Image 1 (cartoon, rainbow, N blue to C red):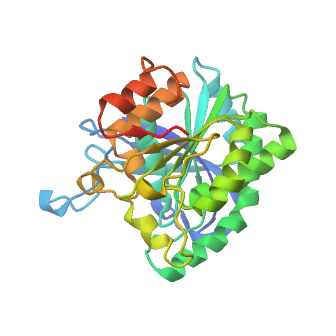
Image 2 (cartoon, helix red, strand yellow):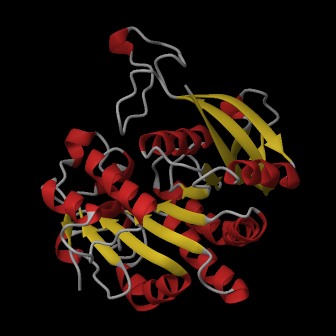
Length: 328
């Protein structure tokens, strides 16, 4: 089957016509569009199926793999009209995924489609794709940090447009890693200009943010602007261990002894999840079935880890044995 994903991006076009090459890594103007992504019939929850040489697969096959098949750039009014049309159906809501450092355009779109499918999301999946290059290096990391500040006003403009002009009943936000920095500042500014309550569930997955700054400044301001903020953290996240080396301070997405617990954020320590077994020590939020179930409970029922033990959300965290809630 195919999943339609709407996107906003401030990456520049390359001049290429292939969907996966349509946008590059350079900075550009804010643009909108829609993609069609294949989900294979034998899709495994949490997986981004792709060609594997040991299965003698050397090219994308929509019947077997998650593939960005079609891309259509849209004018802003066309983009908004498409979301409005879907929102007229029962359960009309939106979730926006903001990727982290080291992502290609097709990575962000494919991950958004996979999450929408696995969550059985009854609304519109949207992704915001900011300029970053898929290459692990200190130079590219520093460049991406600078781009976070550059892209913030674009994300702010997009979120305001989404909240004010689509008629969405609920808007949920998921930010991963460095994308959490962009999201936190943008949401705060939107709330300052338009008032709070525009966004429902906000999820920060493995946020690459200074933990002290997050606890003192970001957490209280972000929670005042949204319905609920949930943070997933893990002591097994090797990428965050690397990212803290230069500044020398723990990141908000680290678990264990560095776990950030505040009264305004629901913090879930997933350090007991075997990240190596999942094959994604930093992207665990979208590949671990327990966490996908947890996000499902948040989006569908708005359940908090602090509610009664009989609630679906707390049942997920208790009965899987791999998630631990750390209330203040």
